[in-house]
Length: 316
Image (cartoon, rainbow, N blue to C red; front, side):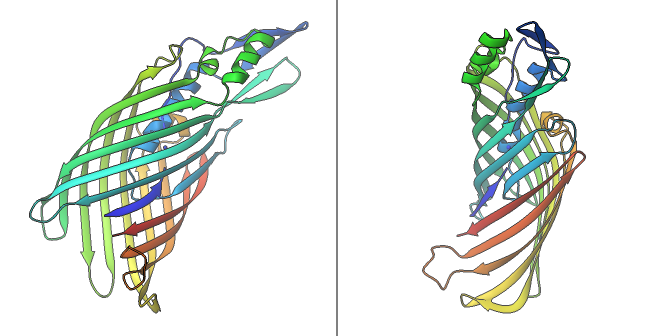
């Protein structure tokens, strides 16, 4: 069974959109360049990033390169395994945490003010599937997935202040919390080759989840689709060096994702590419109750963003 730290989330809003106005003295204050409903829906969409499992297990930080930009940080802990060759039932489970910071910009015509509205999300995903062996090294795996998450805004107090002081009815910030549930499925091709010279793993996976609020603020009324088509590969090569009584292996990773769902809208990119470099060593001869530990640093790029991540994985 593999454990891993990885990335994502999803939130929605109702009536506010486009430009909002309030008065500060005689100045007219405008909320510019922001669809409030779209921003709140974006917070819900981040649940999809958290809920969709990824072999690129890591804690992820992303920065937008356009406009005022959004900040996004996410971490995920999860595991997946097949029970046995004789009973190839596949099980997976992931829990995740994320911080999403859409920035609203106010202007009185001469100057601008930034209003960060951080959203915190926790989510969980579970999956059950079955392995169909096409060859000795290639497996086809259909999976049924369910997801549950909670999203809450730090700006509930800030929303009340803005409402009272500027007359901007940002109700979704004042009551900014909801619980969302989802269901869907995945299709996966999994190739694994192991030898004394090197180990190679390649996966191709499509995941589709539909998420909707099931409890929380009445000001938030939205749904979201989390869809990801991704390919991932890992090469492990012995270095000739020993660590903890076993071989130290160099780890090389490469992956790419296409994001046709709402995550792509929020991240402002329909694709992500990632490259990783790390080490892997055995711990069976130590007191640690694990068989293998892997540490990988990764660089992520997209159309309008860059990011970095650090992954720690362990096998029993």
